[in-house]
Image (cartoon, rainbow, N blue to C red; front, side, top):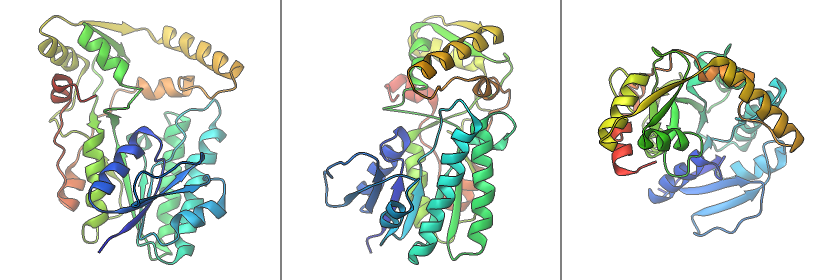
Amino acid sequence: MTRTVAVTGVTGFIGKHIVENLLSRGFTVRALTRIARKASTNKLTWVHGALEDQGSLSELVSGADHVVHCAGQVRGHTEETFTRCNVTGSLRLMQAAKESGGCGRFLFMSSLAARYPELSWYAKSKYVAEQQLITMSKTENISLGIFRPTAVYGPGDKELKPLFSWLLRGVLPRLGAPEAQLSFLHVSDLAQAVALWLIVDRPQTYPYELCDGVIGGYSWKRLQEIGAAVRHGPVRLVGIPLPMLRFIAAISMLANRLAGKEPMLTHSKIRELTHQDWSASNNNLSESINWFPKISLERALREGLF
């Protein structure tokens, strides 16, 4: 039987890959968009609206069996900017799903950053959204799932691609302490996990961490070694001093404010970027839905999958 999935954040990097995967599996998708678009297939329906508009959210989930909530605020110069979208918007969507009477599952795309809500406005907003969605779902007949992916990369990504491109040129900028633990996840593996969660029998509710499954994750030294092996040449590891990062953040915030845009790099974001423990484990999710990632960072660099 064909299932219909309502998806937010479809025009973003992660959302686009998730929808492509769902369509390839025969799902019908209803996608939220702020800009009018034409569907390239009869399996995809665009719904014009936004998370701030309860009416458009009701239209989005109408006839949907499941909801995958990928939309989120990643840029902002105030805490309220993140709260408004990541918390209030998520609760508004859950409310619409509840009132539709037909949504059986609601998957919230959170972030590994939610493990440390004290680090940044973004991390706190994701954590608070998780907690409030859990409370809300307990009173409704909706199965809630929470994914906490680590740093996601792949075709179309604009955040990590510059780092990997520099790595393959022989220079690796290091943020934070040399002993920091890092982890990564290819977007195709994340999309695969989403689809499996939607079809598996009675998945658990608690937050699932997602990474590429490389044992021990990555240190900056390990990234340097991988880069050297892939490019068949040396890689220089260059530490970026914290005062320099703060200076760059200040310039970024000023420039974006003058341009009327929200900045990505802020003092709040720096605490997140320089945190020492971004290790992750797939154990809970693998046991729950039999999902195992296929693409390691080394493979992605060798095959140009980023």
